[in-house]
Amino acid sequence: MGFTSGIVMGAIFGVAVMFGWSYMMSYRRTKRVAKAMVIKQLASLNRDDLRKICGDSFPDWISFPVYEQAKWMNKQLSKLWPFVADAATMVIKESVEPLLEEYRPPGITSLKFSKLSLGTVAPKIEGIRVQSHKKGQVIMDIDFRWGGNPSIVLGVKAAVVANLPIQVRVCSSNIRYVKTIQGLKRHCLPHFRMVAAS
Image (tube, rainbow, N blue to C red; front, side, top):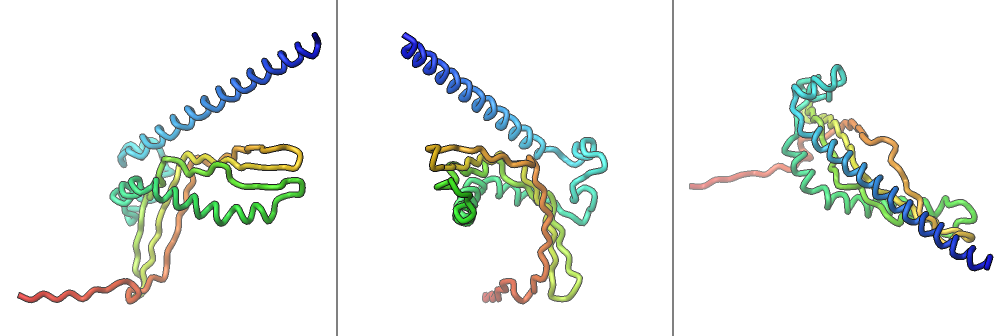
């Protein structure tokens, strides 16, 4: 009688844990989708709304008029993002998984991504500044932000445990990156000769 009741109680406990885990994951997923929707709504604000919200911490294209908006580029980037995200995911897997395997601790047989997705929210280019200080040289500053919803699950296989999925959490929900591209010589850029005859 004790063995049978132990099995029944264990099965009930296991089913309760599975339902609790499933509920927590669906709750977390809905919170992440709601956060992505809020980020998308923030992206549609105009200059005056942003000045009211941000106070002194404006994006560069508001505080410095030499920065230009790139609305057309953001629109195209949002259309291309599913394809760019897939390609970036493949590149990340190909470059990071060998490093994970190389530096995996003893006792772990395999360390690979079981799920890697950069999410559905595309990055946004806040502003672009192009300068030409010297003849033949172009300097371009790009203010780049990404408030995405990535999903990264690391699959760990150990000698003792069969398979252990670990959810990797991106620490910052709004990543900002300002990159300066310098030294583009004008003679390196494509130059087409046009001839018209009538």
